[in-house]
Image (spheres, one colour):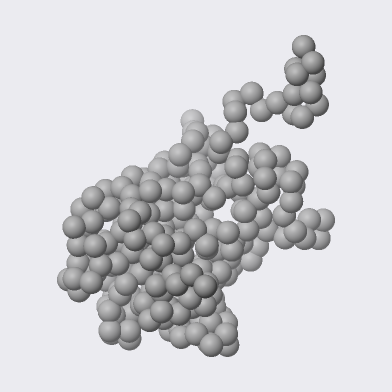
Length: 269
């Protein structure tokens, strides 16, 4: 069995609560970290959501605490990190999965909508990683930061311009943090999901063709969680500043996007 090096590690998962019909990436990440032996602080704006995830971790034999707060404020980010450090005696892993897309054509996008999207998808990641990074630097024992970005931060992002720009900021943030904090043994990386599968009555399981833009199959919450946990494990001890698309192959498709029938016709020419 591969040792991920997570046993006893002290971890924050920001956005650990599950808010249906969203896929529940934070919940899956908390459960997966605990399965690997980490002690998990389930952080969320909503105490009931965080408590539900923490209860699942505990029921599965893991250790979890609940911490609530609004990471869009620097003082709250500092308080949350301080509470986790007080409970666990330090901090080794900090994962931020918080974010939400807003939709709108750029010429009609309002300033308020822009500010909300950037604050929700970028500012809070910066504030949490700033505080967590300071703590890890002071400890002198290294650490790992991992965030959820998006393929919209890597490619064009029509109809949600602010979300794409904010997620591009997350991609840049982990690069900068990796360079600044690397000398202290602190890594920073991001996972960039595409369209994450959420079960429905018509499609209870992901599969080819369920989402037209995904050649393989849509990723599920667990797929994103696995990428985040990989970045925080010993398997990735030499990986930093990277953004890993976990999107079922959507972001590598050619610009022509030929349907299979048309490819067959072209091959006969």
